[in-house]
Image (cartoon, rainbow, N blue to C red; front, top):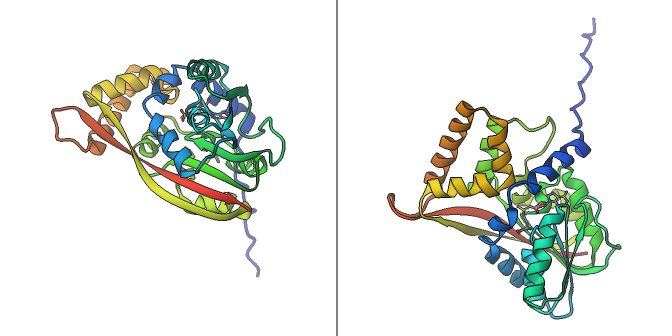
Length: 280
Ligand SMILES: C[S@@+](CC[C@H](N)C(=O)[O-])C[C@H]1O[C@@H](n2cnc3c(N)ncnc32)[C@H](O)[C@@H]1O
């Protein structure tokens, strides 16, 4: 007698359009430009690592208030920043104008970039396209926008680092849609290889640390729940008791990642992966 095998249940496929609309509202809440000014040096370092030259055409994907586009324009490159939050792009334009830089900003989706194939010498994303819900589509767009022989440069939070852990905590309190991959997979070289390897002549990875410095872990929490959309929205969606638990979990996490002695100013280590890809 042959045993009848139960039919395999297909994995649920996430509703990417719906998820993206919610995410867009999340990034538009608070004021991400306030957070971005605390991590400027990540973009400056990435542009140095990508060896951006004067005259290069540089595309910064999910640019927010423009950190990496502006860093590229400071090297006399011609930069375009794309993001789906218009208010952040307004802030980016203001910053570029104040510094007299050649940087333009356009509304667009990391999964459907408003640019021609192979039209950029350098394509960057700092903690940006890692948040697109359809990760392969976002990766395909990076490859499409970059010319053969050009450079793709990425900064991505690692799964075990401070921000990777923070997103895991959010997921414990507010489970993500079924089938959605954690953004911090972009901080895993194996996953990047699987997504981008077919278009890469070479791919090098460097683990780096971004320090978050505050007078206390409480000040850090207050700042993030006021200005950082994902934290702000998580607290909005929880009742008071669960919100207090989330606050406790973030404070514990911050103490764990603080490299300073207790009872003084804090310096939390946020590990990220810097990836430089030479396009085939
Ligand atoms: C953590 S912020 C980083 C912003 C900027 N790269 C920086 O370094 O300051 C994430 C950014 O990604 C943008 N973003 C997320 N998903 C996107 C998508 N699918 N298309 C365009 N922008 C997206 C958000 O609007 C937000 O500005």
